[in-house]
Amino acid sequence: MKIAGASWLREPFVHFVLLGVLVFLVMGWRGGDDGGDAQIRVTLEDQGRLVANFASLWNRPPDADEVQALIDEHVREEIWYREALRMGMDRNDSVIRRHLRGRMEFLAGTSAEADKPDDATLGSFMTAHAGRYGDGPLLSFDQIYLGQDGEALDAAVIRTRLGDGADWRTLGKRLSLPASLRDADAVQIDRQFGGGFARDLAALPGDGWGGPVRSGFGQHLVRITARKPGAPPDLAKIRDRVEQDWRSAHMREAVANAYAEARERYQVTIER
Image 1 (cartoon, rainbow, N blue to C red):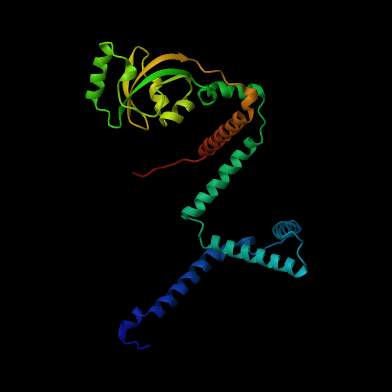
Image 2 (cartoon, rainbow, N blue to C red):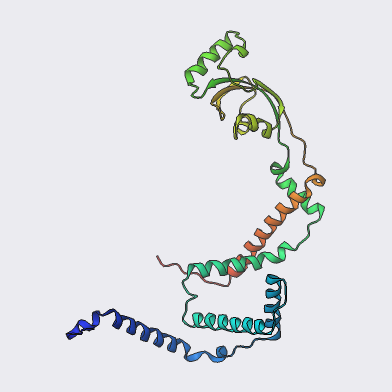
């Protein structure tokens, strides 16, 4: 390596050495007050956990050499973990922050997950979310297919012919779908006409031909001929589903409450 004048400052090797010295100084500065952190105690409980994890993975207990290797690896991990904390590597690391947040939220929701709701609690939850569990209204309707691009002019012409007394079954374009459905729920309607069609039909008035309404095939004029309320949900038949939904909502509420309680312990200042 040829060094002339101040050119040695530009040498990569010099940069590497200076970086190493800087890291050493930072570690020394942070490590001046480590107190009891230098003590690592591998308890019998720790060893039992290591052996249990090994047996769970390999379906057999470890021998003496393997136990020692497990302990050595545990100590190695603990030392590197503490050294990383001493150097502040846990600060301003988005991955670590998200992981710790997830652990805290998990702990906040753990107790709620173990709660057992009774039928009254589930019944109240089901009533509050009736739209999620009820069968929904049953619709009867007739439809005239206008085609994929169903122009407004086509709809206007057909409406005129309907007003003149034309048979609606002879109007519109041919489509391999029923011209009428009777007492069909949303699942049955969407299965034939495409997702969202039942929702749009439910918004139509029941006083003649409405639309055009778009399906998965194109545009339709639709006449609602009857609406029937759906059967109320039966808790006995869907209890497992309701309980699962209740438990999810209960855990979310527990996490939100734990956060609100923790939030009160902090004063947040946002610089503008």
